Length: 78
Image 1 (spheres, rainbow, N blue to C red):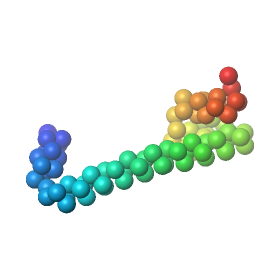
Image 2: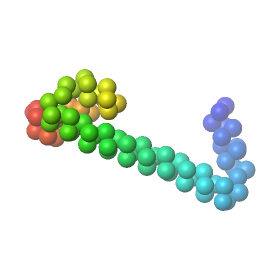
Image 3: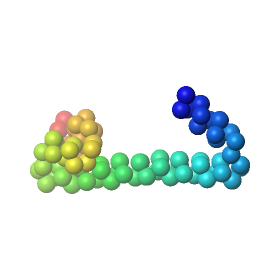
Image 4: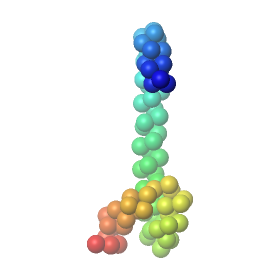
């Protein structure tokens, strides 16, 4: 129901309002990607310093699987 209301509301927007709404959503998505990339870079530094995977996951909000992939990319595990 919420999605239907959002779609109806979006259809009633002016072209300028639609553009603003699309830009706002694009900015949210870009920030999410940026924050994820930043978390990955932080995780790399933390791994190289010898911090635990569990601690890194807690601090960066990355999953253990993501951190294991970073370890593999760094050549820390096979």
